[in-house]
Image (cartoon, rainbow, N blue to C red):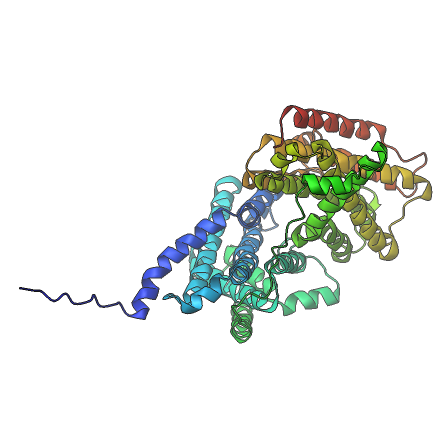
Length: 543
C-alpha cells in the first residue's frame, strides 16, 4: 500500500514578506550596533553634548522660570534621528547596492522593497531609542519635564521627521555612485544643515541667505516642530505648517528614490588596498645600487605614498580632517556676526581652534584607524618577514599625518586669511608651522599608543571618536562665546593635549603679539605627551 505525499503548499508571497520582515529588522539593528561610527554620531554624540551643554548652563532658567535644559533635548534628539534615518540609511543602502546584495534580491523570494522597509524600520527604532535615552537623561539629570499632553504630537513629529529623513536618504543613495561618497556627502550635508537649522545653534540671527536656505530645507522644520513638543506652554504641540513641509519633502524624496532606483552595482568604492609591503616592493623601494642613506629615504618616501593613497581613498577621513574644520571656520563667523571670543574676533580665534582640530583628527582618529585596518589584514605581521623595518612603515604613516595637517592648514589659511580677515604676523609663521607639526606629532603618537593598547579596530574607533570631541569642547576648541566653562571641566581639559595645542596656536597666531610666537610651556606639555606615548608604542607591539 502506498501513500501519496502531497507537496507542501508554498505560502503566498505576501506571507513570506511578512515573515521575513522581523528577521531583516533584527539584522539591520545588529549591523547598526556593529558600526561604531554610526553608533557614535547617532547616540553618543548627541548624548555627550547634551550632558556637556547642560552642565555649562547649570541651573539657569528662562524669564518664565523654565530650566534652559528643557530646550536642549529636542535639537540633539533631532540630530540623532537625522543621523540614523538619513546618513546611516543612505550609506547602508549604497553599500548594499555596491556589494550586489540588492541586485541578488531581484531573484530572491524576498523583494528589495521588503529589505529597504526593514532598514527604514530599524532606523526608526534606533531613532526612537535615541530620543528616549536623551529624554530620560534630561529628566533624570537636568530637570527636564515631559509635557504629557504633547506626547502624541511628539510621536507624530518623530515619525514624520524620521520618514522624511529616510526618504531623502534613499534619494541620496540613488543619486550618488558609490557608498563611500554617499556616506561622506550625507554626513557633510547633515552637519552643515545642523548649524543653520536650529539644531546646533538655536535662535541665532543668521544672515538672510543662510536663514532662507535653512527654511527651505526640512531639518529646520523638523527641529522647530520637535521643539514645540517640549515647550511647556499651552496647546497640544502640533505644528501643522512644519509638519506639512516635512510631508512634502517626504513625498519628493520617495518619488526621487523610486524614479532613480537602480539596484545594480555602479562601481565599487571599496578601493583596492595599496600593495602590501613585500620582499619585491621593498627591494624596488630600496634598490641595492643606491647608498644606504638614499635607500632609506626612498623606502620612507614609498611608505608615505602608501599611506597617502590610503587616506585619499577614504573620503570621510578627508572630510573630517580638512573640509569640516574649514566649514566651521566659514560658518561660525557668519552665524555669530561681530562676535568676539576671549578678546579676539570669532574668525581669528577659530582659526587656531580649527588648526588644533584638524591636527587631532589626522593624528588621533585617522592614523590609528589605518594602522588597525592594516593590522587586521595581517599587513603589519607580514612586515617582519620583509626587509622593510616596522619603524619605517610607521614613520611613513606619521609623515602622511603631518602632511594632512599641513594641507588642512593651507585650506584654513586660504579661507581665513583670504576671506575672513584672519591675520598672522609674518614673523610668527615659523612658530605656527612648528607648533602645528609638534601638535600633529603628539596626536599621532597618542593615536599609535591607543592602537597598541586596543586590539579591536571597532573598539579603537569608538574610543578615539568618543573622546576627541568632548575633550575638544572642554578645551574650548569649539567655543562660540565668552561664557566660562565650569572650573572642574577646565581643569580636566588642561591635562590633555588639545587645550595646550590650542593655547600654543593662539599665541603663535596672535595678530598684535610681540616676540617669536612660541609658547614654550604648552609645547613642553605636548613634547611630554609625545615621549610617553612613544614609550607605550615601544613597549606594546602593534602587530
